[in-house]
Length: 247
Image 1 (cartoon, rainbow, N blue to C red):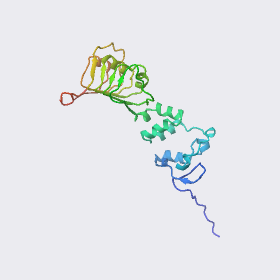
Image 2 (cartoon, rainbow, N blue to C red):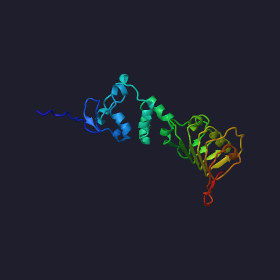
Image 3 (cartoon, rainbow, N blue to C red):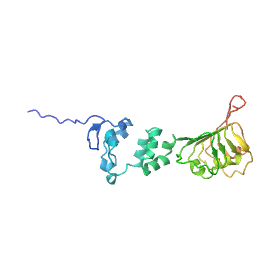
Image 4 (cartoon, helix red, strand yellow):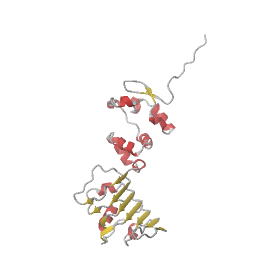
């Protein structure tokens, strides 16, 4: 009698649910980079910390956390890089460790943009809640008086800052820039300066490369030493934009 060769009947690119149904299903993660997907699909739950649940079981099953060993941070970052912004926000709310991984990884949080509501007065009583560690932020048609209580922690992570048609004192603006040492791009359009008194600049934004504005101050020369591009937009008077390469 001819021996029958044992065949692997495991469906391709499917995994068995660790929930009560135990059925095979196709997880979305197998559409990732093939190397990452293979690692995830063949991981053992108890040793890797990775447990597969079909959409139905995911709604009802609690993970056996005492037996879960966390995946390495490097692997989690590789996985998270394939997620869109909404999914990353869900990841941040899953647990403290995942929140820290997202918040501390520029490659992940660079997609976060915080756009403040329009026509807001930012004074001593203004205290935004649940601010993301965004790399980019926009302030529109707002009056900025005092941001000392919350801006330093928020500004430290910024690489792009845009102010449009805001009212602000030059000294307040300089104070905000001092607390944003990682800025690469700064846009100041239609700004109404409530005061133009220049304070002594004891800081420099060494990483700032692009400055877009329609009003220049002498102090900019000393605090932006490494500009590559200045975009002078005279949108108020209707003149064309003038873009200068800074040598």
